[in-house]
Image 1 (cartoon, one colour):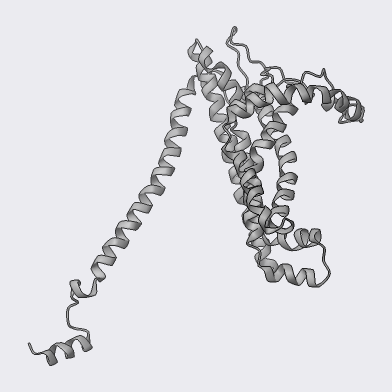
Image 2: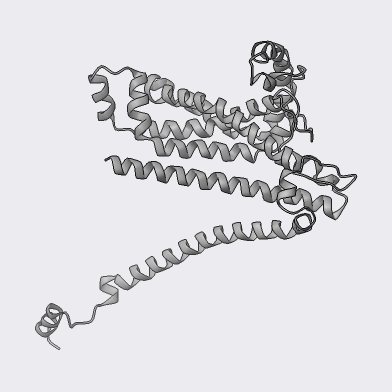
Length: 334
């Protein structure tokens, strides 16, 4: 075949492609391999999650069959001697300690992220950001030891002032009444707030830095203050990511074990005061897992782990739902 005939066939589209010259089949096989590997990785993550949940559900089936779902959730009695178990105090302890941590950590994280991204001079931003991120590298057991040895005695001297100031408020005063022991639900919430602060502040700082400078300069040119720029420009622009960072910190607080175990007091009795000892699901698992001598006792502890997974999944679902609703609202308004 002459070169003129080959050129004519290529121009008409009938000439076969040369794999060595074009390289198209190699690119297609590489893309196919990459997509297959990505699908396999995603499938392995989902399969691991489902396998973990199924394994925990099977191991807790004896407790589920004995106490049921609703009775186990609402019961406040946890007595290994009589083989009577209920999860209500621990569920409340987990939610209350995480709520205290969020109430304390979110405003501080917002202020820290705003200072680093908007107020601090350039030479100061990196050291402060590194110091905040260093908090996330400290092991949780170190937080627990520090909380028990250092923070709890100091906080015990502050608790009388808390009781005298907030314990007399009608309606909510019962939350701040109790002996000044230094350990309890409020102490655990403070330690959790310190632990989740770097996660929330890092996300806020990154998204605040991503706000276009044109928006900030326009607001400053109109006479806005730094607070007005942060509240009316930066926060609405990054609302979705900020909420995602907050729920990331909440998930971290819900599953914390060792730090909470050291400072919460580990009491199976539910108290209305935040100054009294309490317990969370992770702390109960850490304290009593090695002491489970009967099958029902061990199954009940694993049942608590299954409930903790369910709580985490519910929090994750609410986070996704809230983010999507905000995104749809922003799209409708624009």
